[in-house]
Image (cartoon, rainbow, N blue to C red):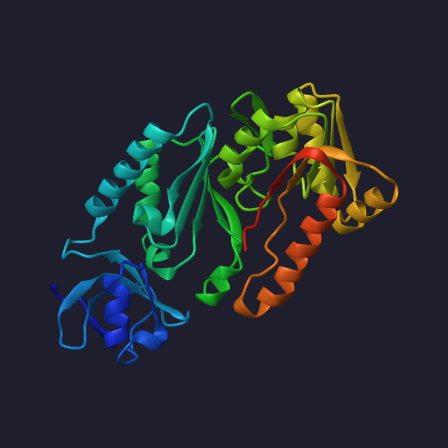
Length: 334
């Protein structure tokens, strides 16, 4: 364990760690260490058995985030090897797009770090002090291995506040244009990396957008459309696609994307989706394909009852305007 500070877990915490979970909650610490946030510490069980190395947080309910189960030296070479592994995996699984998530936090062994690439323009989010401290060396690795056109810190996720980290958005390398053009299969998108939701585009829905496009037909509805991600994939197979979105800037970007792809069969509607579905049912309007991709209704445990009512109501209203034999694609990020 070299000279690392030691954090002792309770018996429950030890069992949680050995179950494979990458986080240890504060209630599962045997004592509260006097360590600054972001410190790399050795985790041990109640009897002192070594359980791995983790980043400590003095502020969050998540007290420890696993870095490695071994006794590796966590230095620049350590992170470089993990970066190379993450990039090699993307080369295997990412196809027909120049927009993808290169690093997905704990899934790639980078606790609290997200890196998205939009045609070579990187959007970087650190959500924990552990890798926030190491950001300079990580940025050097990105420049060496990715040759990015630009690097922008999207440090505007409110979860940073739970870790005592400030909110900011700034480009720290290269020049970032107002819009970056990317391709996703046959569709092209203009992405606002600096101000767009998430880091500019909902990359986690890429495969779902492509899958839905193979089944879509007739009159289609893209509810909570944002910048038209689903709609533009549906448009070639549908007679008409109606986009419903409450955000005017999002609809403006959807209109730009429609022009970019030469699509004239899109109807853009600025409205609350619940209100739109209620009016559509009352007026006898029906759809053959419906996409529901709402924002999170439940962001914490206490939101669950209201969220369940919301999802039930949303899907119930969608079924009221879905033609017999139609397709409903319904999503939840709660």
